[in-house]
Length: 337
Image (cartoon, rainbow, N blue to C red; front, side, top):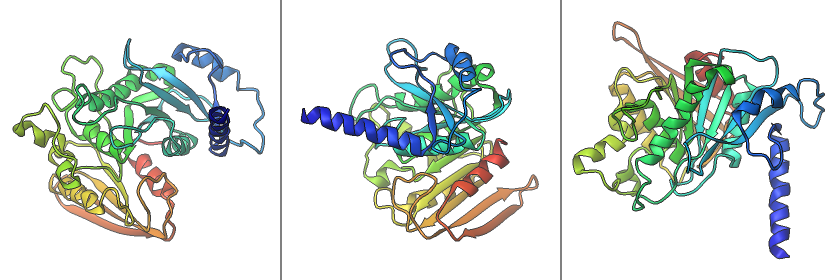
């Protein structure tokens, strides 16, 4: 009985969170989600009047398969309200959890995904293989899984109404690391790359939210199965080159899980390679936040390079901790809106 009460309470909390985030679930109870059902499910919402309890909702189709037969990991698809388009930009969001836990539908992932979808982006929040570094089959499959989420979006641009040249990847904590690896390392020859892939996993922008970028600094140890010479390839700091897409880094000064210096080191590596990037440091923000963290404000340092190699550095500040505006500004400039 106690288990049933806890289960019902958890379900009620989940429903409350979903309502608060104004997420309208498209899926049908008891029926596995299929992308082929999307047109019918969207059409069923066209004549509905959304009330004050859920104004301007975003639509979610949960638990879509994307990794092939035999894989339990799924993804959630978030779609904006309003007229359908054929050229929307898209964002793949990767959850955190120390590489051993977490889920695509956690509060942070749902909140960020809903915010981005409400701003007009098609968003995919994906799961990936979980497990300790000592567990066989985890590394670099976790990176490969996230690349496959990007490939899934690009392979289904017609059904999703997405521009294949306007896809970004984002993630928090462990997901921040994975987003950096997807965005900066080669999608064929890098860790978790697939030289036989018919659909590229390249992206046009990266958002790293307080990601682990150097395992040795964080005490996580080496990646098993990789030789000493290969270990360096698993550090995003070593994957920077001038052809990389622009990167936005978000980190809080009160983070006691991943030290802020890791993000500063990542920014320094991007600067050395002349990769356009922005580092936003949020005063008083802890670890694991969405686009509305606790804190007292933020400072943004943006670096860009002209074709002649000249550097432009712009420092700006926000008097509130909210990160929705600078994040949407970054996406608008890199993949459009």
